[in-house]
Length: 621
Image (cartoon, rainbow, N blue to C red):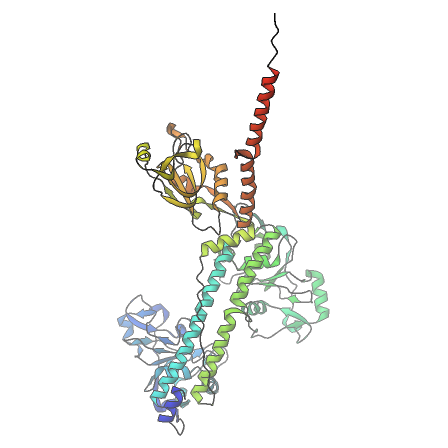
């Protein structure tokens, strides 16, 4: 037997009494302050609009305040009172409520009902969100454009009122469900932020990417006028901006569907042009810049000015352009060209002038692949967290309604799986860019820890003779000055000469060794992104260009080394490059194989023939 069943058996074995709200509470109207009365400090206040947009179900701290003089004329909610918004634009939202749990009284605005009661406040708030309450409020609500419920009418609402211990256990169960859903929603929000971060980084234009205006790469057109009396209930789908916005948000259009006749479609599309597969429809009025990719070649038409069509072109992947229209750079651009408009519009000419970074189609497709995967994880209702949240929400609503009406629901035990998906954004972004673009440009300081050696004199080497090399600024003998009995570094590193005639000379080091104060050392922070040998070869080619030869003493100091830009391909490509260069190095420098051995053999051969050719038998006499 569950704890709830035990409590019901103990306190209400014969069933639960239903009472009207008027029997357990009093209801009063809110006050009269407005948003213009808000202050940064003073008396806490709750505006009815905040109940819809800012607050959850339980509130212990107000977001806004009013001054003392304004507060004298207001109505107040005290701790555990319920504040209900009784005016809304729709039947679903009217009577949305919060429980005030703050320690001090809060002033309450108009368009509200303040419910003072003697029950468990959370229990009542949960009940006011059930289907049972919805069925009752529908009967007392009035209005069309603005839906209202008269506060006094709430007194007749019937509510199951179990004893307080039972109410408390129901609240405990529902609080657990609410917390689980909140955690999943927070995870989904984090994923969406991660998606937006990667999307904006991938779509940011750099110096190597061509930027073109949309009007230079494709045709943008509007539809011919369709009058409302030409709409039909079947035929060719007729798209409005509300259809695109609803589709984007994954909901049904509350305005229903619209159609035009096939004859009208043929007539109008002959003038404006037909909308085809992979064209992009984009909203041009009100909520502007919302994209929709046409999925097939089935006939459709659109409302003039409300929607505009960007024809598909060989120069861009439609999914790439779709993601670009969702990016922060585009949104910022859109704000910049419409900020003075009372009702913003995105016109054909503005679309044609819109700049878009256009990498190669191959790169566009890889970007699309990455972003579509992120988008699916964040948004697809069949996979990932949204499905889990939806399932939890349905489960929560089922248990809430069942518990509050005491229907026979059986037993269900839920265990929540905990996830730990902490991601290093920088490294993730680097790997993504390497995948999408083939390589990424980073400065040495972004990917390496930089340090210097210490003073080690020749007398130190004599006094501490041992097995561990000491490398200095010289280039002879691979930079080795001598050996001592201790070491500073152990592993795989790149060093360079910081001062003197050899400044900028780079060495690959491995094992246990030391370096003097005229050497710098690079330690790669993440070897899943960059390997030491590739860094060595890259700097061997480029580091000398950064040496400052002023004042007669050439230098390549740490700050300048940190600024050197590296071109870093994917790890597999780095390994391939290193393998090739290692073979060349062997051919050129190894004393037992390759060219040095051949040179030595040829030299000996040359000396042999030289000596023989220049040796003559001496003539006698």
